[in-house]
Image (tube, rainbow, N blue to C red; front, side, top):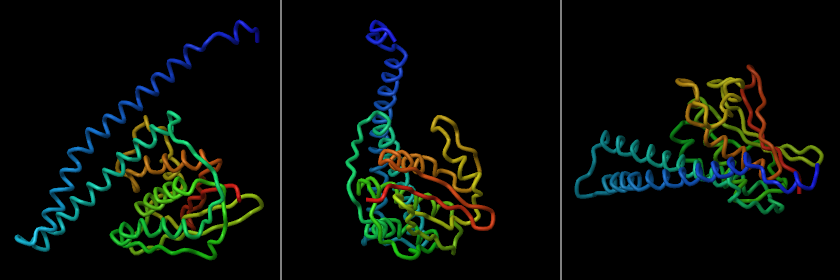
Amino acid sequence: MSSGAAGRSNPGAEDGDASQACDAELVSHFGHALRTPLNSILGFAQILALDRSESLSPAQKERVDLIQAAGWQMLRLIDDMDELSRIDTGRVQIALTAVALEPLIRDSLAQVGSQAATSRIGLRPEGGLEATAQAEPARLKQALVNLLASALRCGRPDGVLQIGVRRAGDRVTIWIGDLGHRMTIEQLRRTFVPLGRPEPQHRPGQGIQIGLALAQKLVERMGGRLCIEGGAASGCELQVVLRTA
């Protein structure tokens, strides 16, 4: 390539960067516009739930609990969308270090404990979780919590969600399974579609796309990969593959 060609800028790339920055700003403003009324809804729902002067009936309490659960879920989706835009525009910095997986996995399980109880799905660590990986602790936990929350939405009521660790050479794999039979491996793989493409309607696990996309981007930024394995007999398994430390 000639020096003149090398010195010229790429208008297409510049336009793409500008468009991406504009999209990120739009997502940020959109998130802020949604958070304000959503926080008000959650606040009033909490007041209703805690008001001892006029106690709610069991049926009313159940409805208020549903309002709060839906509100917190929407707030998490907004946060995930904002985080995705920050990753895409290079505003998320990753500093890799040696991370002990067992305490991080147990903390992640504790964070989704209430969702598991509501879904009537058990959480069970399998085998030894002792291993270290190259990762950023906060980002790896964020990815695992998103994966566990998505897996719980795919799971069967009264089922059990397992999580474990496998070591092979210079790689360590955190696996999450059995995801049950509400989603086939083909359905789960189709969940990883570009966010600009609509998700199929009326299918099991609907609404997990953003959480899975965010987890995938975080894992890839840490030099790892997110895989989906499984079959008709064993159900699906999510795998986070990282370098050992």
